[in-house]
Image (cartoon, rainbow, N blue to C red; front, side, top):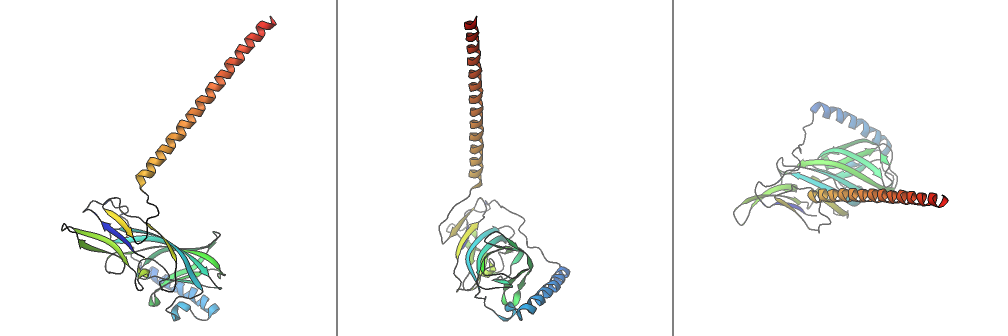
Length: 278
């Protein structure tokens, strides 16, 4: 999987979102979250004897990722990226938890649903740093079927040269340009988005890239399925509304003329009928 953003002109980009900032957490709030997390973990531990994520560095084989639907939104001004991933997961046996890999990610929300759209309440979700897991503990035990795990996340584009990051290069004309690119091998996809970051798991991907309107192009090692250009959407909506109004007016005029003709014929027939009687 390769995603790259390449700058094509200097300082000509339009920034889509200037509020991509990773918020700093309150130490007191973290302490409270840690206490709550331990309480939830203790409840799970009484049911399954030991916590899998504390005693294993590999993901459980009872869960299989079938498909990823991912969106990336890099901000070249703040050097922060936002994203969302929806993972279609097959659960092969009864599970009290779900695990994905995540490293140096700021995860803002996690939700879980089945293929019928039923939402499952999550008791707790947290990062287990030692083994680079994102742990999701649902309220009810998961039965064997397919589920969709949805996670909103953000991360830094600077400070590393793996995962999803920015770097500079010099063009043939001597111009310094910036790109945002990816390096996922061997186990650095977890730095870009929560995932099953082991080579044994094979999945399909659908990727949406939100980039500045000007100055950048998006490159991938797969062909583009569709490209959304907002001005075209506005033109399409305008044309659609114009046609709708035109048809509505045309129908209204047609009905009005039809009624007028009908009344005119009725009056003429009425006059003729009266003359015949007289």
